[in-house]
Image (tube, rainbow, N blue to C red):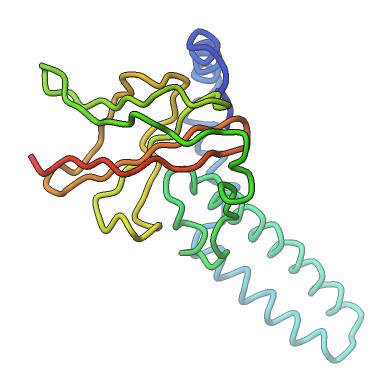
Length: 204
């Protein structure tokens, strides 16, 4: 992920530069390149119709079918890429769109990163919620995940934050009407370590 292993000053510099060029006009243009439900349905119907017509062997209709296939492949590639990116926040997005589950990385690549120890979640005197964990050998950063449903169902978990520090990780954006569960792991590049044991915070 861009910025994961940069210093605070480097991330701030990159975000400042992006803020300068990421205008409303460019955002609107980027959105215009993405298929929406209506355009995807229109492209699908046109592709399906040209494919049916091409089965008779008419060269022009075969050519039209191939052109529509290019359009549909672009749509699928864009939506797959967006779903994969959004899986950082919600790992269920790809499955909800029919692309299947994102590949599991932890089981195959957890070696060389130790198990977390000393994981705890606590409130400071002002009522702000933080997490601490002992320094994980082999890790360059830490992923803190949160769940306010059944913690035994993997799809209920979401990434709360990534941090280069293992101390005083700020936790925000929780639904405090429910029990919130937490777990943490060390990461190094694309390599992820084993999960910690769960911690929980009762409803406010």
